[in-house]
Image 1: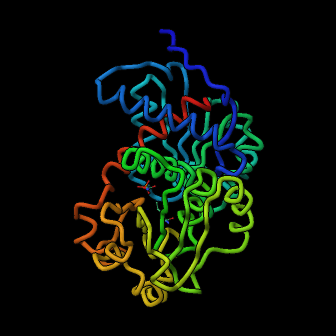
Image 2 (image 1 turned 180 degrees about the vertical axis):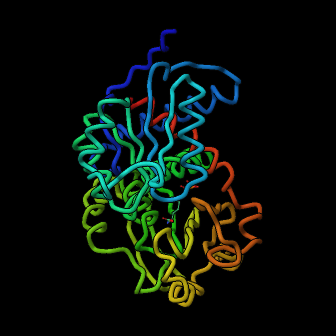
Length: 316
Ligand code: CP
Ligand code: NVA
């Protein structure tokens, strides 16, 4: 069987975060995600990954990311191979550099979910094949493409929208959202206590992108920062690997919960609610908002699959 051709100027590139991607390039991948979603809803069958293999390395747990990679690659004729750290020697008995060189001889691409951003970078450096970051402590680039897709479906346009992230402003989601919003001219606010506001390094990275697109970045522990937001976005208070910080996080973040009053404080009747999931309702978001009419979390979760397929079509 011969694979269907898919032309992309990005073949061979890695996606480690969106820093080195131009907004026109990200827009192109977004257009492909919209295309593959339409194909999927029309029941079309394509075979664009025939003869290809991808190693899916997971040091941390996953429902959406793993399912998106496995289903979208497999249904187009590709062969995904799941490897948890129970299965392979990664950074333990065998160095990340050596693992990269071995996988590079056997696979068409690698997806990595884990702790250190430096590990996904080393995999890309030494494997010689495209590497996709499926979440690290610092970034979650495939997630934010799905988030942007969901915003585009809702509002028709991205530039000039305002997204407010409520909660742990130092985490991988807040960092990645700041980056992609800056690149697309989406105003990005963070509603978080001083202790959990974004680190200077990511602000410095994003400032030139925001200046070029006109996106405004606002960070505050004052509730007025949510005013004018078209979207309130939140994430778990305790990210994977930080379980020991649960008590402190709950204390710090309780006042920043997304609830009906906070949605109302946006002043926008058609403001939507997004969450990368998994969610802990009753903590970062109330059941009322999560299950309510403003919530778009299931569309957002579905879009993980279409965006991940588009990313793999683009790079592999
Ligand atoms: N949002 C997300 O990455 O979900 P999983 O952890 O289930 O992959
Ligand atoms: N900040 C969360 C995102 C999960 C998709 C975590 O890293 O656990």
